Image 1 (cartoon, helix red, strand yellow):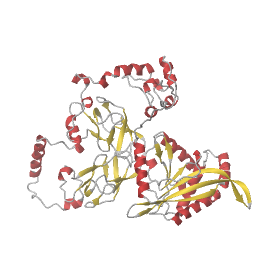
Image 2: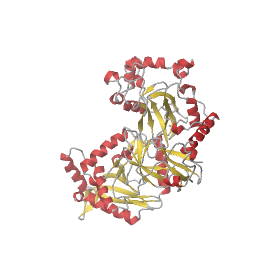
Image 3: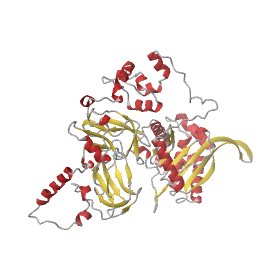
Image 4: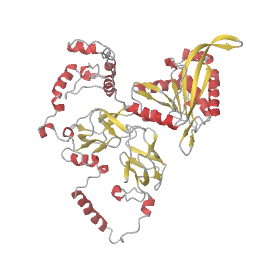
Length: 562
């Protein structure tokens, strides 16, 4: 059965996308995961994959054309399938499709077709068919906020059902596999329906919410159209509690909550806690009740520093209650089995999926080399004497890798199934450990940047990753990746390739060991590095040659200036 593919919202500020390239043409067979098109957003050019098998029957616009978010991008279905019902009033069908239509009625009777078509649509509606959701401007679907996102978790709603919404207002905070992002409304109206509550998951392109004019939107019909006839939960219909005369448990609680919030000095006139989005995210991550936090911002607004400095003892002192003793995990009763089960986060799910695919799809092999870091240690000390930004060993390794990759382009390549992409640009991903897993911000065109610029960018992006503030343009497009565990005292390890890269470099710590120089045993600084390679792209000799170049650059750092 033919299925529409709508223009996804590929960044938090995206309102429209430009088709940079089509990788499939009308009539081509498409498999789930195939690259359909490249879409240029306001942040980056991103690859759009198909999420179903079939034949590409229709494209919404040609290369260079613009489409608004949620406009019809493509239709995928069975060969020869009639898609006229899906196109509706869409006139953007490719020329090939239009040319295939036979000549119809003579010019004298052009008005007859619309008259015939109109009653058919009305009859269909009267017969009980569901409305076309793609044409409803009231519907807000879950956007695709990252290149790997398949579902999102509602981290929190900033508006509740019945609230007025203006264009640009933050509707909700969505947790993806990469970060927690704010979702802004792109229209004015009233929030009439929420597709999920805080903590619940929604698939990409599923119904997120409905915004429209109260009393003029049939919420039941829209929900039925999206969900195939499912009933609208009473708590989320576009009706006020007063009008329905009903009260739920959730509605009975606000009185007590408002009293607590007001006591904290951080609630607004409506009883809602005033806090910055970052403070809300940090509080949620740490399990802190915002109602118990004293805000130090304007008018008692809670800011990041309030969350960072919050302790249960402060809350207890403010309320006059005794403070609970701080402890780690609860002690297990002697002789009894005890454990905790923690739900898998979106980030951890995607890490598990992508690394499993990489390890079990790409044939890995590993090449390890020991590098004499005496010269690099001395050079770093001299550089940092007058540097505005402190240079780390990781920055030096990254710069050396960037230069080596230009000399060994096979290492800077990607496996694309029926072809190998040899990248001429050098974008190096730097693995950063965060609370829930691992993020890989990208230093773009690293071969053209100096050590100070690299150091500044790495520090800034690493902090953004830890604060969950990275944008898609800051984690996409890597051609090579570095993972450094040296700061944790790790001497040597192997890393799983970060797809679509062909290689990843695992960097160990610098250790002082006895070495033989000029026939004498002297102390020396050594570092082990291990290159993981995709054998479909890189052979052993190629990997070894890259490490030889890297070794020569780190052992004689002045060569990086030539």
